[in-house]
Length: 625
Image 1: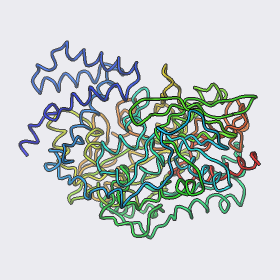
Image 2: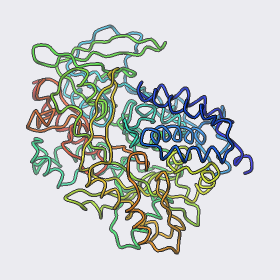
Image 3: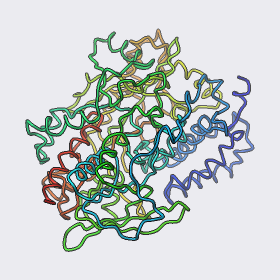
């Protein structure tokens, strides 16, 4: 314990890791701002100050304006993430024993036990030009469905994936390894202002490889709303049977394999005590899913029991003749004669070099996710004035409860229970309450920092900490733009009055569940945490939560659900694609992912993405026939 309390980030080489990371996760402008902030600390001889003086310097910097606060948050997040997540050659971190975290519970299977069975084309053997019927950009839940259905219809299909091909043999149950393998920007992407962390899949299979397997069907009210906004077929009585049922059946979603872990037992206890309804989440897991080895869903399922796109639609596409190219970034959509004619891409060879690849196609399906799909269209100069606008993110807010007994929130099925009692709080907008895994690096980065000692004392309580998460159906919207290099930039802030009201209410109700479940202490992820201790007046605490700041970088929250940036609709001025999913201004180009959503669905979006892609593929196939 003494060694843990004395250990510094420098002892683990964190400053040098940050120096290497910053250029890879920040734009040129953001990097320049971070360098100015760090240079300013150096001019103040920060490195020569005592620990109390350093804490005081950073506390004063926190109040020096939004730009300094953003830089401070960047450094704080990276420092604490790396301090608790960096591992040595044995796959261990020296801080784990002190905080009671066991680390990985199993080793990855061998390649022989977990072979990679999806057909991919080797970069070294590819010609400069390929000709196919359909080119699908992105291999997540939307792109995988379209690829499978087109291949099964007898069309030649190429799938381009910017990420790599990772499966069980690569999954190490480690935070940093999982972030680097499976997420856009190595899992360190944020909005331009730093207001929200952006978690988006970037691997073969997309977000289905790293999500928590919550399979919630599209609410009827959302289908009705989208039908009014011009989405074809979705309001029809037979839409569930034609499009929702098939994807649910292919994923074998069920409740029989679902078990509540320590977090969800507390969540269930609190909801029951308050008389709030809840239900078991349907999940795309094998029936013999063993909860003893679960919890690491966000870093890939090492047991191979998550029925992601790797196990379902991408495998179906491959078996039907589709071929995939990984580590292949789509630069632009090619057009001729007023129609989409293919994709220009940049292919990374095994030796680190890059080369141009042209895929000529009768139809192009843009399914790279709601961050990268609009960036592709913006680089291509197509899609009209709505491209990148109307970004919805369903922001997720965590509230921590510290309990008397161990929770061990890193083990067991990551999500198993949902409360929908607050789905409609303000004019059809509200929030769901679910549980969230707690891992050292992620959690340390989120917990408010006052000084090193107090932060470490908080981390010592990690085994007894449960995180309940609320994600709101956002009313306002942000946008995705591209920078000077053509890379995506997310702009979203909690500036819509309805969204801010929902964020406050979500904090209060989530904290109330913790209190009802018997938490000894509750705290938020504000920069200066709002705390409640057992025996204190909860309603007074609720008032403090209402009065707390939810401004940019005053609180940490994240999005795992991006959507709406290439939305469908009837008006080319306010939508990118028509009600079938084809671009208004470029026939032959289709939207096949969550960016097609007109508004946020208010539930975990994977099943809705897949059902819409299933429907869109019908129209695409009809157009090619």
